[in-house]
Amino acid sequence: MHRKLRLVGWTTHRGMAHVLRCGYPRSVPHTTPPRQCLMCDQDDENIQHLLVGCVFARQFWFCILSSVGLTLTAPKTTDLSFEAWWDRAESAVSVEARKGLNSLITLGAWIYLEAQE
Ligand SMILES: [Zn+2]
Image (cartoon, rainbow, N blue to C red; front, side, top):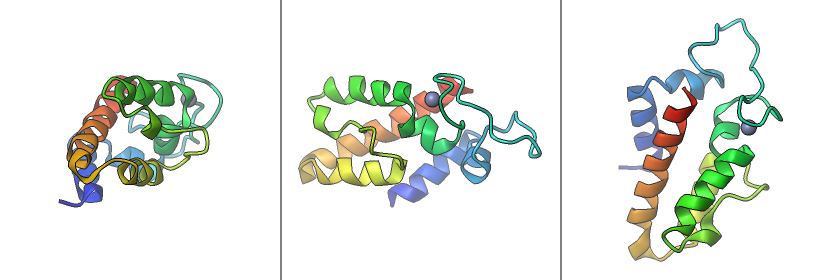
């Protein structure tokens, strides 16, 4: 299954489709402008920031990926799009390692977003 479909599937299942569509959690009314990130207070809290833009998200990915020897695939400050970072990370590993990396990123994103709710 294409990873975008997987991402939409799990985010919809977990009630995160609203975040993807509107850029901020369901608990925030539609008329409310995006709020600042509660973790770093340095940018708007939207899905791209939560997953790769936030310094805490990058630290999260660094810890997970370095634990399996994939430190070089961790998001950098220049990675502002989750999808673009995922593409870059996937292209940096062998074909044999891609399934494991994709599972790690999918589960990591799920866990990280759950912790933000
Ligand atoms: Zn942040």
